[in-house]
Length: 206
Image 1: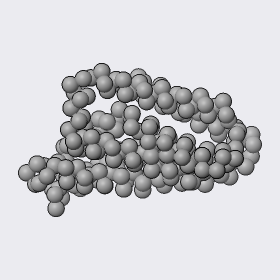
Image 2 (image 1 turned 90 degrees about the vertical axis):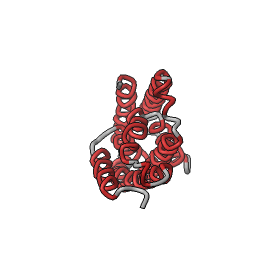
Image 3 (image 1 turned 135 degrees about the vertical axis):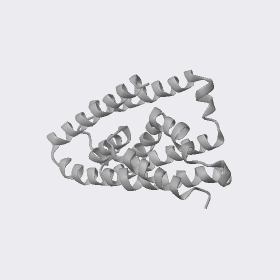
Image 4 (image 1 turned 60 degrees about the vertical axis):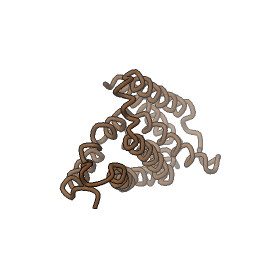
């Protein structure tokens, strides 16, 4: 086994605790589920999980040193993510009440891509990969890349279990609410407001 069992247990517990605390990822999946249904909530989770795999690969390859050598690169990425979230929120508010089902497949693709891009530029996820994951890697136990791979698989599995459940649950509630036109518009406006708020939060975080 490439990982110390004690380190593995500590990583699993710490990751579950971090994911259960409401944050940008969970709120984003909740918003997608409420607006697009269970499938959109699950695909938003898949987008988040894909970006997490990218983060783990980057950390394992040592490319995270870029953010240490060039701090401005981290700032640029954070601001880009904030702008993208704000744009999503504004668009959702402007298009509130429109039936996404009129464009078959658009909801799922949009949820996946949005989840991927949102989490890819999430500074907390970057910090998690750069600073947190290496704490559970022991070079004396074998190839570092293999240990990162194990941690990455656990991370992605927990992402689907926790945020996926949130997205599907929100989607089932949202499906019932969207049948009422007025409530649908309010849901979209609230969802857009959440995304804009997340963008502002992302921009001011250090």
